[in-house]
Amino acid sequence: MKNNANMNMTEGPLFKKIVLYSIPIIFTGVLQLLFNAADLIVVGRFSDIGALAVAAVGSTGALINLIVNMFIGLSVGAGVKTAQAIGAEDPDAVHRTIHTSIPAAFIAGILLTVIGIFGAEYFLTLMGTTENLLPLATKYMKIYFCGMTSTMIYNFGAAILRAAGDTQTPLRYLTIAGVINVALNLVFVILFKMDVDGVALATAISQTLSAVLVIRALMRRTDVCQLNLKQLHIHGRTLLGIMRIGLPAGFQGCMFALSNVILQSFVNSFNNDLLLAGHFASGNIDGFIYIAMNAFHQSALNFTGQNYGAKKFDRIGKVVFISLASVIVLGTALGLLCYAFGEQLLSLYISDPVQANIDEAIKYGLLRMSYLTIFHAICGMMDVMSGVIRGMGLAVPPMVISLIGVCGVRIGWAYTIFQIPQYHTIENIYVSYLVSWAITFVAQFILYLFALHSAKKKLRLSLSQQ
Image 1 (cartoon, rainbow, N blue to C red):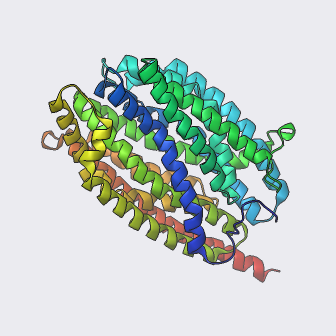
Image 2: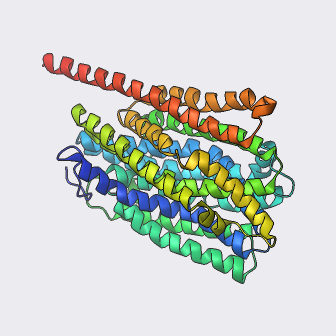
Image 3: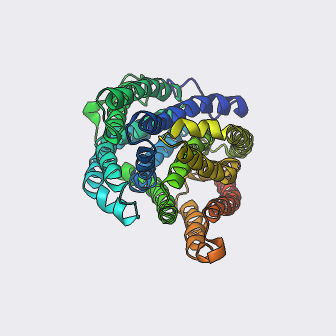
């Protein structure tokens, strides 16, 4: 099957291909994070409200993820179905998937825009956002969600490109959008004296540009992944196939985010804006480590998807080993490095007229990093196994495991152990993350072994009947 990706995932040595495939995804993810990091840094250092603005923007993160993740999950389904169809050499299925995905992304974006604009203040109030942060956080969310249609289109388009083996195109276009985002941040905040509204507007504009460029890339392809706007059509059975994989993934993401929102409400309950500033700043630094590891989740998802479609199950085991080893090495190295330079990194985000406030916020950020940043590789291992299992076409079982292992553990921890007076500390909230990651990884690995054994058994039975 001819394609423009210049990478055959179903043949040849895997290690070099997985690494080469993952590197552009790492840089792409870092640029995406820079959108938000630029928001935090610019408003923290150049706006008149400093640390308060950092806390306001940061306080929206868990809620935005909660609202958006269901629809982002559908892009996972689109990517998996595209990868499996390419591996099975079924051009008609590839065509139907692509031309169903883009209009579905547009509709999802419109729905999210309506939800975000009209529900921002209500949802932020519900999760216990403090009164001095609520007006700023609401303003940021409403403007941010105006760019949600572009966000959805970009995510669906990028998922299709990656399923075809093209990770460089999203990187190139996101680089352009990222530079524009940072430039607009500076213009709106420094020149026009805006605060959170300026950085939200800059993000929405840059996201729109990245969506336009990705659609252009799909239209200019010459293989089966070419997009023709005149042929956009939601094919019912194809959409159901995307939803069968995507909705459980999205629901799982929502439950992850819900557990984070609940835990965030407990963090908010300490009613300490400096703690929040340090907490959100260190969380943003962790995001860079997560993105680097998540590239191998994407690799595992698509390499597994193509090899599963081609029925080359032995290669899937090699994909798992290489991906897990990569996140362990990369996640641990980056975690230790970030913690070693934690004070300097946190100081990029936090600014305040009072030096004592800066020192206090950095102290809280370093505390979080000592628990979560150093051991972030466990989260990467969990995500790799989730990608492998979804690449094999399983959707509901990994969702159930994650709901119990991540959401159940975190929420249960928050309402039991955390309520004991001597354990009612911010440190105990961080411990709940580590425990939930480890439990979920072990359960997912066991599920993968059973699923791979079942797939091999079905293949042997099919071959014996021919």
